Length: 466
Ligand SMILES: [Zn+2]
Image (tube, rainbow, N blue to C red; front, side, top):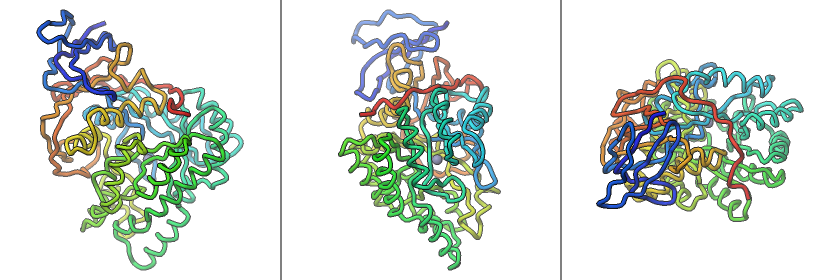
């Protein structure tokens, strides 16, 4: 086993900052050694990394990714190999991806299929959530088997009728089943039945540009679905996690439920904090690059979301990374916005983008670590193995230079997609080293990881349940 000493840096955790050296032994953190000014720590190691002037963070945890996901006859463009490599470049050391049950298939066969996709291919550790799109007696029983296998969060959809959509009755049944084990139901909360009518009306009126993807999915229909999901979860007494919350109306519903003490949690994503409906309106079909669901919102929603992150009504920032290339994939929807594959690339830039929030005074340094690593670890049963710099935890560590600058671009990013949603954006801060279970995967501007280093994480239950 080899040892590494990360010396001279500022350790940032959800609690605060500490001038400390971090000793890594094999795959684990062996010690966090507070520095005594003027007195050397007297610790030796096989390798010493000088982190003077840098932050030392627990590795990022992105709990919402879609690698090689089937959607509308195509697949998202990152494989587990390319997507986890790009994640490491951006300081993320764990992803939780979604296994997708196709209608008429079993949850267990689905889980096997996703294990086969990821096994031996990931650069960083990974877990799975399960998308339940076919609720029946067999599926409900299989949920317990999934939970025993470390997959205890089940995503359902109030959107996409005919594909993933579940009725209120089906959602209630799945919530009741999950609740028996303390498992969490994750919800894509948009009223898909009403949205489909608005989409049909827009297309019939000849409004086919990407902008109408946004205009046919109004924020009120996210607010309504979020409220309905919260009510169903209350009746079923089931923990609920709202994914990719984008709208002020939905945030208000979550805040109200949390104020009553209900086990309701929510995440948002960088695209909702930094991009807006204006991007969907870009000419020459460029708007298609920004098609995701829920859609990007008018700019005024961004202020609510930043505030929600400060008040903890939004507890997590994930990416919903689901990249489709502009050429040949997004282009499927030329002349009909409803045929544009839904999703955007983002797994590489979550830590960096949120760091801009720190630089702009939107959130504190510890809060940055909390929403990108510590809370995701506790929410999805990985803490304290992940999400913290502490003796005994996995050595998933990011050395981050807060003063470096970089320009985001498709020409330099590592995601397997032909555009960047943040092309040309100049930002402050950059990953110097990403360590996954003691292995420096990104080191001095080079990728030194390997497919298959990442292992599957069987997860425990949500640690925030009241
Ligand atoms: Zn998603």
